[in-house]
Image (cartoon, rainbow, N blue to C red; front, side):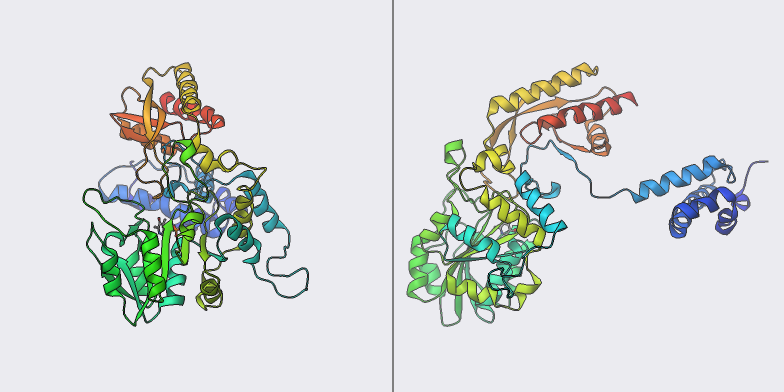
Length: 463
Ligand SMILES: *Cc1c(COP(=O)(O)O)cnc(C)c1O
């Protein structure tokens, strides 16, 4: 007789069977019950929707093995390494900047040994965690003082809270940015307890607009990097020098949210002439904030650099403790910043900058080597094509980086399905779909990742 809904066992009855009872000794009772509920629930649903599912032999060791396998799958970490073949170097969804080995080593040290994180070894008294990077940041940016927090969003919030709470912040309508969906400058200003005074128009803001908006309540003129868009055509914005002069004359603070701060001139590598943090501070900007894990190439962090009196105010602010940087990131940040000093070369030793400045021939060579490997496993639809890569995360938004990709497709499989199958591979391979192909951009892929990509394709085309 065909099984019916009535033949589904109770969870407790299953737990009493020896093979399942054995699982409870290896895993937790909760995990076993959860998987059993899932199995029985799916079967019940099948009966209720009119299907006639076959029932497994609930007493068998093979059923217990199936349950064990599901428990193991549920135990696997959710956060796993992936291969970034998107061509987007600083990809926020893929964890942004990769750290240099020196930064990883520093994190390992901070994680596994006690450190003088907040101990002044000279006096034996309580020290400041900021001391470990402040001098370095000042040396690299020319700032009088610096402090670091959890990320750039926190840096903006803390800076405004400490300097402009209950007062007004003047910002151009062309720079009221939203980054990554949840960082909206007008909202952050509101959260800080300051009042936003928008000036100018979307495309043009003049120095006179700022000047007219300043009154007794004004604390800050805020300039922001339009990280993920550009206003083109008839545009105008005052020079930093003009803004700095105005801020000084009217005794308000000129602050700039740089987003992705650049510490070195990238123009020798064919990259745009982005102003470096040192030059921005030289124009008279009082305080800059920028991310640690964008073009700087370090861990998640928010760096605040500028006038000593303002930085002192931030250090003393009650919010400081809530947004402080953790010791692992602090260690990685210090190690990354040291790579900007001789004998190191940032464009060689910091992965983000190395990828940005990689020679095109090197990328092309890698594309041909991957194509070769894929043809070697019998793939027919493999082609090396010119491609465009990007810095990502709102860094150098205007800049197309020439690159090479391997364009792939499989017979009898849509590119969407192929893309999804690659994401399910171990390790997952993340490409992008264009021109009816899955494009694997080689600017963001390391040489030793090529065999993993080939293996992923071999697995997919074998099924
Ligand atoms: C990226 C960015 C931020 C946010 O930085 P996080 O480090 O992600 O918090 C803020 N402002 C600008 C202009 C940005 O580009």
